[in-house]
Length: 516
Image 1 (cartoon, rainbow, N blue to C red):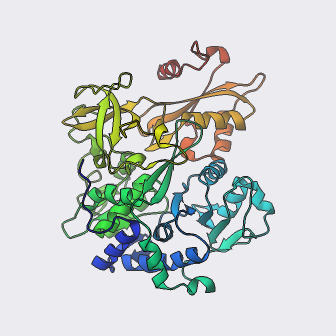
Image 2 (image 1 turned 180 degrees about the horizontal axis):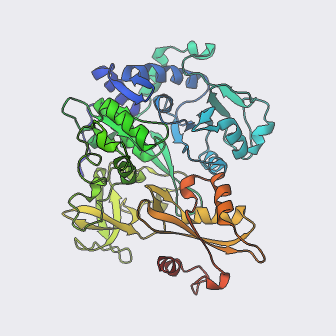
Image 3 (image 1 turned 45 degrees about the vertical axis):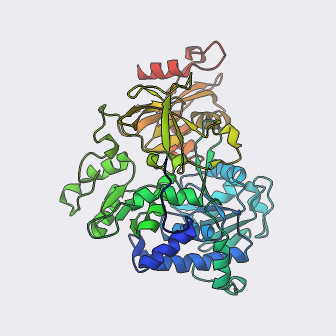
């Protein structure tokens, strides 16, 4: 397929420069109590880039980001991208076990975060994630549990010896001495082929997968969304996607290329979202259908002064269902591996057993490749990710209609709940390792009218023990993301679990019994 023509060198820094040149006074990021223009973002990210350079952060440095969605997140993302660092966003839903895992497997060198993230004290959270921090007496870190981690930069008031103070508005003397000419020289050495970002998503194994994208892929794959325009000029996106997931990257990349305004709130709540959408007169609302439906169901919705917005005030909440040849089956929306844009890749649908293309209308596995496809998975060799012809075998069950793929389900066991991917084995291992009363845990996705799929756990108690689902759920929410915690728990005797001849649990039979 043809690679889109970008009118500038496709790097994130060049995209920012073009946005400022074409309209630096336009609003870029707007939250309920703060506004930041494109020019503001350039100045603030250039200042932080100098701080990074003075701190030894540069091309290829693994930089973790954990901020609430808003201006600080975007400034940190831009600054790290400008100096060529490899950005690794951490989900604000992460709990200690997940933070510890990503810091380790992501080789994070420097973590940038706020003292408070969505109500959580990050000093306490990080010490629970990496217990060796409690005994650390210096800002320079050398910890076996996070062997690559050298520093944690934290905004706000801090009282830990291991935390390095971070002020977005002030520069230490060594950073203040760095001139703009050095920042520009560093930016020139960042090329489209350089790695830009690793987005972690639940994998089919116990550890999350790191989807690696280059600068060129991020810019090119988001250019189609950038082409959206409102009647009065650049669009005004309300972004219901978290910035740490690929939907946030899609929106921010498109905004840089279109001069769009991005409206966002720290924590999604239907009423607060509608307040901002109404006040700022958004032209598009980008988010999962369940979130859009929750706004449509809000008691204040009928009285709102809202513009015509597809999915919110016009048409169904799930725009992927519009003109679907099969009622209830959505068009494929894209994935982390394609920067959320299925249109940025060419695709085939094949029989997973034979590898042969199937006729249009017949179900098969989706294969993708092209300019919008990821560079690969972090720490995995290319031959283990793509086939000999460069195709990624997605595991998605789809059919084609008029050349467009429609999503039916997955050949793999991945559970998709409220738009988030949940790896069953990750949750199973957590439950078995953290609760002595659990002998076996079997996790599957079961249909749910609001979530799409519900994370369902079948638990077998250890001998002589009993399981209290409410207590288990409460404790699990303290350690892992809420969307991974099972919302339906069934207690079965070991004899009631169906097993395959291989000694593995029969997940299909388990799911069928749950459905019955």
